[in-house]
Image (cartoon, rainbow, N blue to C red):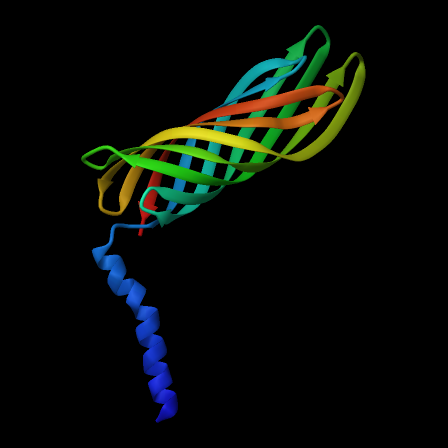
Length: 186
């Protein structure tokens, strides 16, 4: 008898958030996105490639989320005066997302967080071949807009900036990325 009371109490405790979730707006989400990343590397210049993003977020207050994401920043390719290089960059980030609701399902947001970036550089510079990997933590900032077009679906347009994704031998690299994404909220 005592075990059945404990089981009923635990079931009620676990079911309570489900009942509340039906009356409250969605507070957790997953996001898939794609877009354009632009790498700005000292000495080499700038190049763009396709970016892909996957993220998950949770609401911590009425206007604040926490988001964990992975973004493939594409490959930057450079060639000039006998020098050539290909750089492949990826990042995992954790960010606080501050939201400001406008009207009719539209909202603006800003992101501030930390990113763990890793980059592989391969190429030839001054007749010497190189193949180096670099990984480091760096800041990440972003801004965006969301349109919640259905109760559990939203579209995102976002700009994010990853500072110092690489710094080797005095050369630094920054990456900025535009993405369009689709969120599923529950």
